[in-house]
Every structure is written in structure tokens, then in C-alpha cells.
Length: 241
Image 1 (cartoon, rainbow, N blue to C red):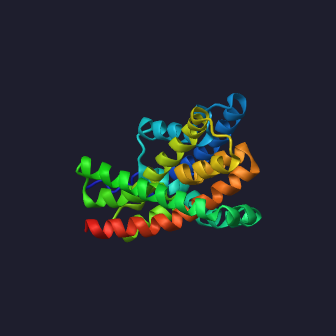
Image 2 (image 1 turned 135 degrees about the horizontal axis):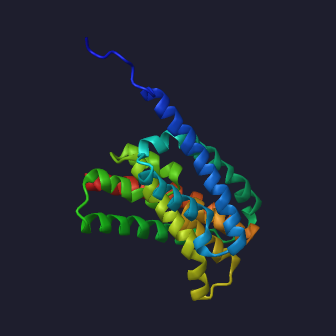
């Protein structure tokens, strides 16, 4: 007679265990990364960068995959929406500064958005990426909550768009301070604008580590850039199709 024994552990239990593991591991690694950052205060000790690299190394090391990881951390992704809406508070607090400098902000955000989408488009063309990958790469300079929506509506892969966005944000937050030192930029307004435009959510977090005003300006720039990039990326994808 054929062996009718049920496999152990069953698939649903295996998936649930992976979900619990990755959710707990991500939070644990982030907590350790915060302590590391407080100890060294260096660009390479950024909690987002350290956590991302550690998880990236653990997934293949443990013979897991992206689906297992996403199954345990989907609720973190779900919090991106409310977190983005919460940026309205610091924007309101700095409304006078924003209204005073709105022409400069508008020009800077417009130029930065066009440059980010243009560079993504050029890179996709240079590498002969498929339309699906192009649509996933174009919104990389928008905050993750916006990028995933744009990718899904334009035929891309939301998971890939989130990955490209995370890489852009983590890299921008890590090297932003170095770039500001090299350029000898001292304006708090410029500091916040650079992080908000070049590194979206990760940049805002880094800007708040520098100061309250820098973080508020970064929040405003990130939201403005996100809204504008949604339009620009959507038009660009439409042209490619």
C-alpha cells in the first residue's frame, strides 16, 4: 500500500515558523544595529544599512527565500502608509519656513525628480531591462509606499520596486553626510532638502538624527518629491509602453 503518512512539518506550519522567525529576526537585528550606531556614529553603522545587509546575508545562508521573509515582515510594510501620513505633523510645524522657501523647494524637487527618473530610464535602457523591470526601477526615488503603487499600476513588480527603493534610500542616507562635508554645505535647510530628495524615508530618519529642522524639511521634500515622482514615473512608463 502507498505510504499515506502526512509530511512533517506540514507546509502551513513551516510557513508560519518562517514568518515568526523573520519578523523577530528583523526587529532584533534592528535593535542591535541601533546600539551599534550609537557606539560608532559612522555612516556604515546606519541601522537601516546594517539590518538590510544582515537580512540579505541570512536569507541564502538559511536556505530561505524572499516569500518567506515577506511573509514575516508584511506588517512592517503595511505600516509604511501610516508612517508616510504622519510626516504631515513636522511639515505643519515648519510651514512658515516651507512657505518662505517654496520656490526653491519646487525647483529643487522638480529637478531632482526629473534627474532620478531620467537616470533610472537611462540605466534600464543601457542594461536592456525588460518592461517589467523598467517599471519596477523607475519609481526607486519615491518613498516605498508610493513606489510599490506606481510599480503595480504600471506593470512592474511591487516587491522589486520596494527593493530598489530601499537600496536607493539606504545608500543615500549613508553617503549623504559625507557628500555634505565634501561640499561644505552648512545650511540646515540644504541638509534637510538633500536627504529628503536623495534618500526619501531613510534620508528623513538620518536628517532627524542631525536636527529637528533638518528632519522637518526632509519630510516636506520627501512628500513633495513622492507626489511629483508618481506623476513623472507614470508618464515615463506610459511613453515606454
